[in-house]
Image 1 (cartoon, rainbow, N blue to C red):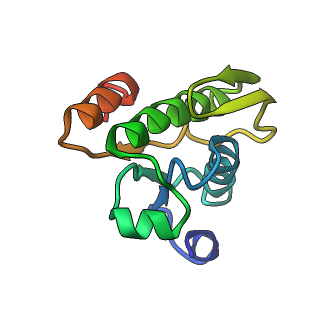
Image 2 (cartoon, rainbow, N blue to C red):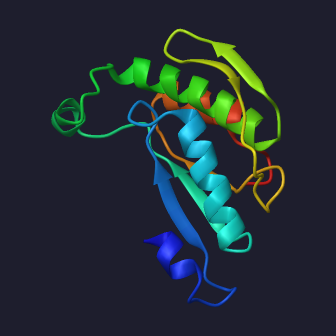
Length: 136
């Protein structure tokens, strides 16, 4: 929806779109974020959704427990951020693995579109502390 609206809206409207670690790859999410940021002229905002209802998550094929979802989110953000900074990324983690991943067309916003993340558990707070820039 955001990509459809980008071409027909004014520069003062920004688009907050969700990415779901565990349900999508960080490389695909990075490419999608960069593309939306480019076609919207730098108006993309990214909401990282690590949690959710266990029944809904099971229906989507995600069977990680609470803390494992945050571990996977931490790995996801590590890969995602490095890709959008223009790095070629090889990463071998507990939950994710990529080999020589890259984003060919970088986002407009530097180093990447602003990310938003919430969580009140210790696991969520730790991921936020490691991955959220101080300016957000």
